[in-house]
Image (cartoon, rainbow, N blue to C red; front, side):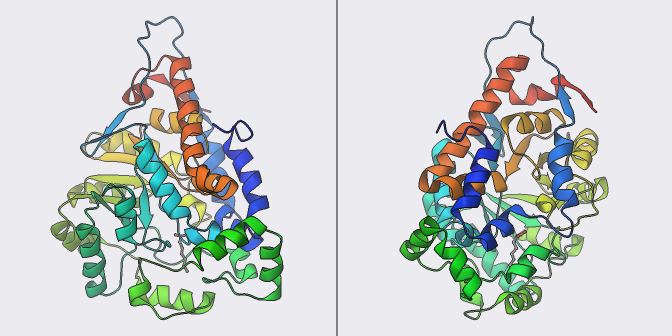
Length: 380
Ligand code: HOC
């Protein structure tokens, strides 16, 4: 690992200096007063682990089986929107790094690389996350593209029935492509690496959605397009036809309580990702680790339970696995890494998290990732 950046927080600080303010604030912020954003990170850290120093230890392995594939670590790269605006070419850098490290990469519907390109970079291993389209024709078309690209897992998103209220983005007039007003030009001038990379890779576009949308929308028009194009509001009736249509593994992301987890099981889904969208949607909600603990205890035997939202380190991954998750995902951490270090950022961030997690496993004498729950003491 790059010894100048031995923590995600180091990468975050460097990222802030590398990318324009409008992009950093979009990445870093939550919604409303950022209460849930901070609860996510702090309440994971209330989970305490028990070390067994005198037990026989044959060595620790991070290898974890999920949906028929053995990954090298129990974490993957969560879907993030507008990635190329945050750091040019970042979804491609992260997809490649994920493939090389044998961890999953999830491509968002609202990112800046196409399903086909992500599949090519990962030899057909990239997962795809679907924002639910209003029209069945569009839904079917996007799902067919994911199927043709041989995505092994389709992730449907339930926690964006309406876009989160994000004061910074409103203040910054966030748009894609970025609005070239004086403030943004000055911000870009102050970030020459970002500007050079943007010139090299071109102005980012919604590559998954490009075939369906008009060109050059500002934030307001984009919001309108998104609201019209995606209902976001899922229910069992909308999930059933997707289950019938999709032959691969089907995962529901944005599960925040036991009721929705039970519905996912009834609908025959293969997994759920307990998540509150990184604290970007409902500021008055619970932190993700709380429902994760309850859901894993109640339904962990019936469905694969995974979690994202608030993880920023190897110890956080360990705490989440100990609380009952079988697998974890991180979004911002990888975007900080790639924004800080460019094309080596994906590799560095994965290596850093692997090193930290391996150290925790050795320290507490945990041999396999599925043994983490034996090491839980308590939440404070
Ligand atoms: C107008 C486009 O889910 C997020 C993402 C993506 C939102 C895309 C907005 O920021 O939480």
